[in-house]
Length: 508
Figure 1 (spheres, rainbow, N blue to C red):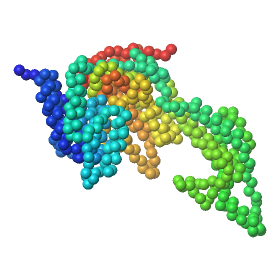
Figure 2: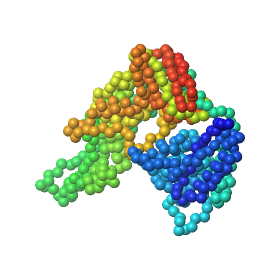
Figure 3: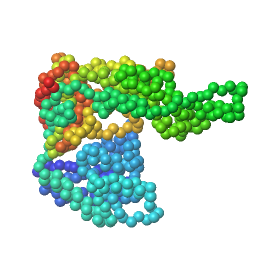
Figure 4: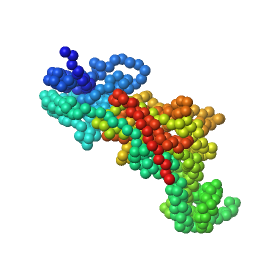
């Protein structure tokens, strides 16, 4: 009579010095299957790269191995002794990478560290140091056990394996339960989303920068230094002391604020009705030391600490003013955008994978990418691309209630950076507008499809752990305010399509 048996794949991961324990694991798994397979309908199958992987081209070896079977295993057992293993592109050890992949996916990992004696001739000191560092890393997480003999390992591993898989079987059926949530302006979750005025996701804003500028003006204005006066000397009729003084002026020329910097600082002060004392730019006897350079190749200065500090503050004021000017342009460009912020919650008892959410809007309701704010000022857009992190500015940050979108994505294994490379010709310069549009496209993870009288927005989550809330990558930007948002959710572990409507609220 046919029986339904649930098969679980157990991955074995360890460096090359672990040999006897692999045979023990196979023995323990077989013992478990003999005892419980028929009565509980559970069967465990071991998976190890030596017997389950196959030669494959087209990518990095570890990335291909992960795709072949690591990501599909239900649990893992990892062991270390003296060796740490072969490094990968992402980690110092293949085994460490496999452990982290499984843990990130919310799967069970049994980790063991061998305390068996080691012959001095076989000791890998460098590898052992890394093993101990990893052990310290996992100590706080309480996910490993030590053993001193193979017999002890067999005993504790059988106990752990049995305890875990029997608890999986006797627990009530575990299911995921997915539901969409709104995120309020204060960052708290709510049942229905509220239409918000978009604000860049940054602690920096025009008000904080302006406050910093005013504080710098006040600090500099309170620092009173004398004005350095250079005596006029007739080079053809100088005494010995005057000649030495002239040489000193050449070796230690006075530090002066550039006229363009002065002009900008004075103009901004007038704009905001900030009064400046007559000695605002005086730096006393601060001089450049032409005979010395700093470690980074900059100029060294000779003067009192107060004189050096005043010069540094004036330069900082100039930089902050320029930053304030660029930020104001960026802030104004994004001002007035309407959006809703969403999150997806799994309040079930099991992880869910390959989750896809569809949001339905009326045609014209969504702000298309080609209508995102444009920034014409070249300095401002250069500041945005080179100094700011545009992805962070547009993203939804994590809180105590929910995690960022990246926490739902499986790691991508590749040989190099996946960031967009922007080519430019030396005589043509960079196309900042194109770089900006490309960056927006990279950040905006949604797929948008227009069908007749509606617009469909799709977003995918690789996995969502149970009792976890994941924010969408960015707000959903709106062109028109909808009264409701229809949605559909499909996932690997749900046979049904979840559908419903979110009522959209507006701030009065």
